[in-house]
Image (cartoon, rainbow, N blue to C red; front, side, top):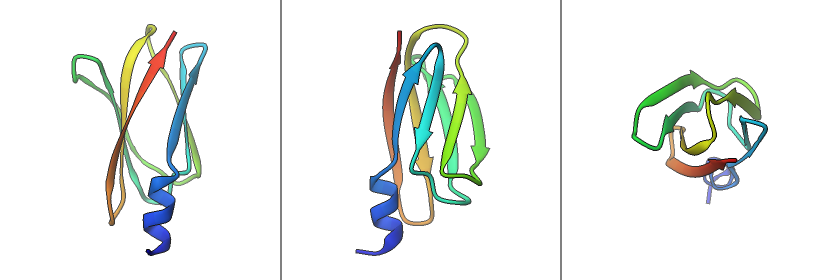
Length: 79
């Protein structure tokens, strides 16, 4: 197992006060945030371990993270 494999498996997301917090990101990983209908709300190439995004309303969102080794999608419920 390489370091990239370990790091991508440690990516997680939480939500509080209409903000999604994503942790465990690798530098230069691609990040996408979608709403429950699949509409792309946000995309960025990460430079830091943590990333935040303020969502317009409470609901279900999907955070997709991709690096050179793997893609991971995380479901986040914003209350």
